[in-house]
Image: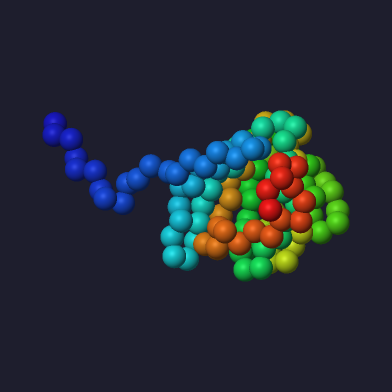
Length: 120
């Protein structure tokens, strides 16, 4: 049997190393974006907010301490949270964690308020 021609729409994701783990960008289109975040135990993302970007996170595995608008709670696998523009948030990995993020396409819309790794 002859192999079917692979469509032009089939691509490989972009891997973006981060001090806390890595991002795997599987979609960055005009109207939406999708990323897989792998966060290493004991590491944390920056305390941040966005002006335009809205995102929803789904915790696939691991445990996350989520800082959200002045509160803290533990996020468990199978739970989702939607972050709207202006929401102050941070994720801290209590265990190695994998999250799926879908968002509006403004991936560079990050206002860092604190960052353990010295990023601005």
